[in-house]
Amino acid sequence: QVQLQESGGGLVQPGGSLRLSCAASGLTFSPRSMGWFRQVSGKGREWLAHVLWTTGTSVYADVVQGRFVISRDNAKNTMDLQMNSLKSDDTGVYFCAAASGGFVDLRFSRAYGYWGQGTQVTVSS
Image (cartoon, rainbow, N blue to C red; front, side, top):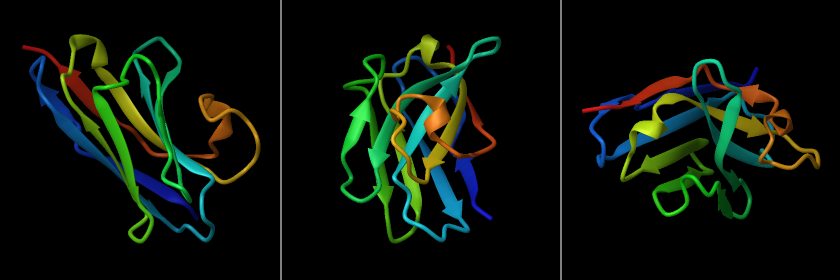
């Protein structure tokens, strides 16, 4: 049974940095990709970034391009999201997700079959 667990959320001031981690257990396959999404109360999950598991190629949403860096460690089955220059608009619950395969655009949540429980990030002074 695949389980994803996020960690590293918390309260940070605007302009600050935070690093999120996602640990995957129970993986019996090599994911097509893993990604990070964000959800604000009352809204759907917003794609932020994903990394192709085999090649390490990363793709970012415009809203985080240049501020966030996604990385993965194949050997440890972990994925991180380094978040810099945080803004109040970055506040939300952050989810990591894994896509086992398929051809759905990885910017859409339906591409991912496995999700973590989420970790709260609050950017406030």
